[in-house]
Structure formats: structure tokens, C-alpha cells
Image (cartoon, rainbow, N blue to C red):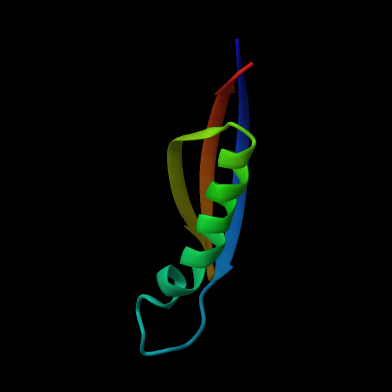
Length: 66
């Protein structure tokens, strides 16, 4: 049997000349979430992303055997 979890992260765009500012600012937080779930025995199985207005939503899907 498996246990599943979804983590949703939201990042907001800002006016800047750096088109990759969301990627640069989100790396640390995403890595922290991956490490947090790995410590609990979960593994990342899938990701997804969408945007709405100035926000970018990143979804991390995890699973573990129970």
C-alpha cells in the first residue's frame, strides 16, 4: 500500500530584467521540501506547474510504501 502527498508552492513574478528570477529564487525552497519529504521516506514521483496572473504554482507529488 502507498501513501501519497502533494505539496503546492506559489511564487510571484516581479518586474525585473531577469527572466529567470523565479527559478533562481525557488531552488532553495524546493530543495528543502525534497529533503524534508525524503527524510520521511517519500520519493518524488511527479511534478507539474501552472500559472495564473503573476503567480506560478509548482506541484510536487510524493509517494512512499507503508
